[in-house]
Image (cartoon, rainbow, N blue to C red):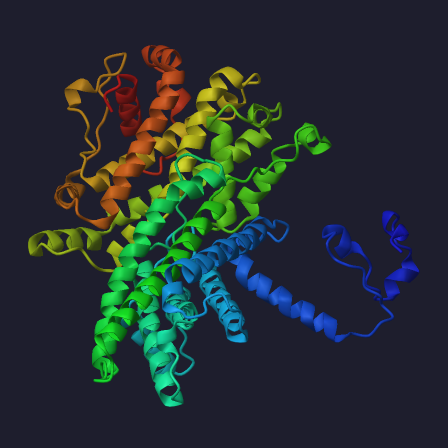
Length: 604
């Protein structure tokens, strides 16, 4: 059927719209389509499944349809999550709840129904967790923004929100949806765990509904509290570990923390739900004995702990599986590995959507290749003779650092952010406003910027010994790397409150007795002075961390090329070799050169 594809199609075939197999060549997972058959309901089912798959995995895959990493990891997460939740449910039924059940080991239809309902509630929680999770924070709309967007939509003809506002509203709605699903899952899960106890078996149907309704309400409050705390503390963020361990050891390390969190949440949820149930559901009737009351509290404590520990383990398992390193390379020894082993990695870096999970995994893989000696054959492929691969790697890693520098430069040049800091310093309140929000959003991708700084520093330092063709120096990549790192560091330090005029003019003498020019920082001294006193701002810790990474990266390069830089400084061509000729993203050529000299003296 597909023999004619290898040859150019004859002209008569172009007149017939026959679905040929070119799409099959692009995606071998597609099945052949018979052009003589009419459309069947099966095609509609496939379109629905494709729509669901696209909704779940498009944002995580970054728009790259030929990668199924995220999908396979999500399916593995569901399998392991069902296994450990089944084990916990079995242990709770047999060990902890069996004293409150007359026949705990007699299977019934209701027990089977509760088992599947319990797993359905966990599936609901897992899908909502996967849908909400992201490696990068994203801003959400405030209640005022939501009201303004709704008013514009209702009262303004053809009114529509701005793209940025629509994105924030979409994020806020996803938070609300997650909290709602947590509440529903909590109600269903608690009822499924505790329903079989004898204390809930009453003859009167109205009383039975009241008892189960009270139990479900307490589970609803428990899930609502957990969802609010989960969103408020940004636990949906995928935090990549500093050291990549095998999944088994990573899961084992997180078990004590998950159990501790489950104890805290179940205790807080028990108190909160108990108080609300007492006041909102008419408390407890006079017919309830003290023994029945105590039994209900013990059973609910056990049930809530089982539900929360299942959620905590699912959250920890999801973190471990989604942040595990993936190797974007063909198998070693294959034909693709011999010809162009870097192409899959570069495709993932360049074609994926910015801030997507796939792009983060690609940067993580690239960082480990550049820093460690595990895949030296992949790093050696970067220094191929043409230099195109090396320039593509450097360009794709400098882009996040350049974006961070430009955003900080724009914020520092703005007078509104200066007034916001001064007003917050006088009133001793946190700075607010759109400019301040943009400043905080600039540090949302600190993990990505840290990886990029480490990647370019490691590649530049290793090019001193591994670059046989001199690609790094001849292409101007070394100067671009040093200039970008220095500009970004100066912008971050200025925001933190560090003076930009680093030395007095008497010390700024060149090799020929030429006095280096200094830039005026009078306009920014007010902002610098205020930001230096406001270390409690949310962005300060991230700014301090990224400044430390940038400083370490520059020292890594300076240590590798220290002798060459010293000789160039004495000869007077240090700026020519290590500073770009165009205008820097932040500061001036003299300021970058002065900062580089401080690194040479190990005084930065």
